[in-house]
Length: 339
Image (cartoon, rainbow, N blue to C red; front, side):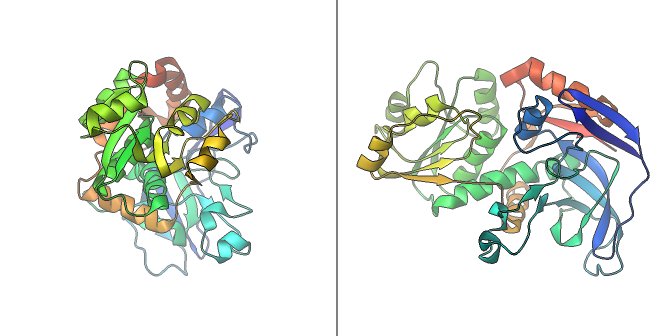
C-alpha cells in the first residue's frame, strides 16, 4: 500500500509498505478522505513543538471499515466510519475523572504517533465512530474539526439567547460559530479576510464584520445595539484579538481560547481581574463531541460543503501544503483523496 511520510519539514515521501493487519481489539480501515489541519501545517513548517520526524500525518479522516479483529463484536465491514486520534494512559488524574482529552501523557495520531496518511490504517475498535450511510466522505472527514468546535462551545454551558462573538472565520472559527448558532446564540463572526467572511455567509452566518475596518464595539452596536458581548471565542491565536476582546466582553463574561498561540501573548490581567472575566481553555474533544458533530451535520444544522476549497490525491500530498501556503487566507479546508 501507499503511505505518505513527512521525513523532515517541507518534505514528503510516498512509500510502498505492507498493508497492516488488525489485532484482536482493532479494526482495519480503507482511508477515503483526509482533511489538512492547521496543526499539520505547523508540522510541515517545522514549528510544531511536540512532533518529531519522520512522521505519518493525518488525524481528521473518513474511511470504510474493511476488517475487524477477533474480539470486535459490534462493528461490521463496509461501514462508513471515522475515528478519534487520541491515545491516552487512563491512569493520570485527568483520565480518571473522564477528561482523557487532556491526559497527562496524551499522544495524538499524526503527531506523536503514526496517523492515517496511507491507504489502509489500523486503530482500536473503541475509537471508531460510525457515520450515516448518507454522509459523503468529505462530510466524514470534517467530523474531527467540527468536534473541536462542539467541545469548545460546550465549555460554557447554555448559549441560548446569549450574544456571542467569534474571532476568526477560518475552518474552526466558522464551525464554532455554526455550532453556537445551533445552540440558540446570536453570533457575530469577525476576520480580516473577506474571502473567509464570504464563506461564513454561505454557511448561514449573517452577522459578519471585517476587523480591518470595524472594531468590536462598533460591530456590536451595529448588530446587537449594545457595546459588549456575553461570550467570546478566540479562534485566531494572536495577541491582537485577545487584547481587543478583554475590554469589550461584558463584566463577568466568558472568553474561550480555541486558537493555538504560537507566540506568548501579553494581556491585561488587571482588566481580567477587575471585570471578573472567566477565561477557559479548550483542547480537542471527547467521543460524545464526535457523536454530536455527526448529528449536527446529519440534521443540516452545520454546513460543511462551503468549507472545502480543493482536493489533492495522496500522491500529491506535498502540493496540498504548497497550495495552502500559496493561497493563505483564501483557502479553507483542503482534502486529500486517498481512494
